[in-house]
Image (cartoon, rainbow, N blue to C red):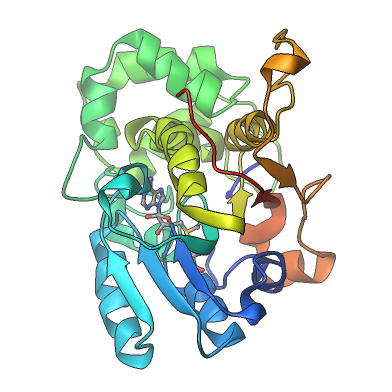
Length: 316
Ligand SMILES: C[S@@+](CC[C@H](N)C(=O)[O-])C[C@H]1O[C@@H](n2cnc3c(N)ncnc32)[C@H](O)[C@@H]1O
């Protein structure tokens, strides 16, 4: 499942020790944190060795403000407010390690004005880059039914998608899709009540819409080869995903880089494959029970790590 804990606790990075260990950060080097958020991982990487330098990216303008404060404490740090799928535009050195910690941060979830959380009577926005793209409200009002199905059924993995999509189409000219809490009520009214579930019934639908309007999967698929290119030989790429579709993309690209079949339908002959890396995590690293208890947002996290052995002439 997902980042559905919709955290109420303060910000806390997921699997910080594992990230430092698998990126070999205590050995010293230059790192790229593609998802700065609140800077938890950037800080862990900088603290692992005083000679480390961290470049960081986030598409969210509020992350830029946090990064400005962060840089006052950490001189070996530089921030860029861009989508990580545009990382090729940056003049970066070759890197010892790259981290992607996908999804939304607790800052985004807890900021009422952003519309990520169904808890608040706030405009249904959900854009990570609040200066660009269409809001979730505009999407619900104007999208083709097919795109709404993609968001709710495919990206939200919501079993009750048909009723929800019908309710969206019926209500999309009303104020019900204007606010996060009123939209969440419509979604909840379409689903059977599970008295003991701790997860809000609108969680999956919110997630699917968020993934759609922020084009999250395409950004990930575009960025993985780019960041792999920026690694030194022996450099490592670590990705923390929270959603099965993200994890599938990570596995597919890691397999391709390592000269393996990308999935069971891949019939390319072995001699046409080339290996440019090794997957270091045969199974994904997941948080301990203690971490999940302390930080419920971590519960669906999966960390996968790849080490580069050769430069890769991509055929994207
Ligand atoms: C899970 S949070 C990262 C938290 C961070 N690791 C920390 O310890 O504070 C994910 C962050 O990545 C950013 N993000 C997600 N997709 C992005 C993309 N395509 N380009 C740039 N930033 C992105 C979000 O805006 C969010 O701030």
